[in-house]
Length: 216
Ligand SMILES: [Zn+2]
Image (cartoon, rainbow, N blue to C red):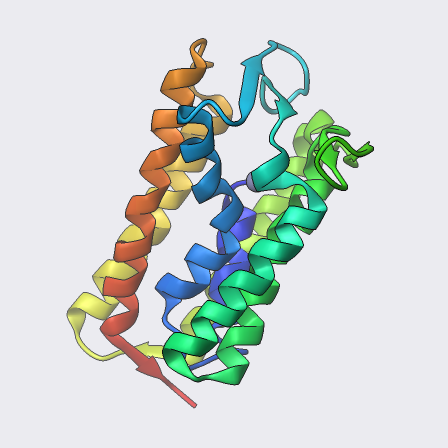
């Protein structure tokens, strides 16, 4: 899953109005922000197997630290606790922790059975990536609904508050289109470096959110 995770982050602004969109995005994508770092460190592995699913060609055969359920629960508790210690905003802490876990649940929907319950444990995945229409609809519905909720619960304080948020939405949409329809990366090092680029979204979301205020 790609833009669907961002949809959930945008939507969460309504649940935790005082939490920055940057935190929400970072939490919802925490496992995928961690993953390229673990790949580059050689602690996790992926290989390209063209045709392994219809939508994307990667075989995620070894990612226990970023994508096993028990580790996702730990990351979720760690992020929620850290957020509470820094901000003292209980609601925001629950939402940030919940978002980390939401990533695993949404990945479960689209991945092949490659998501382990615990490192080395049995693997699950409902495999929506085997259907183009189902994958595209889930991503578009989550992303669209999330943006709508975010835009209706905040309003721009100035022009930057409009441009920054719409350019973020455009870049995410474009990134997703390239990921699903662009040329398949053959080299996994390149894939890891490309995924590392996701981090740019965090300061971008902070910038957009700092120029908006809650409308209710
Ligand atoms: Zn993931």
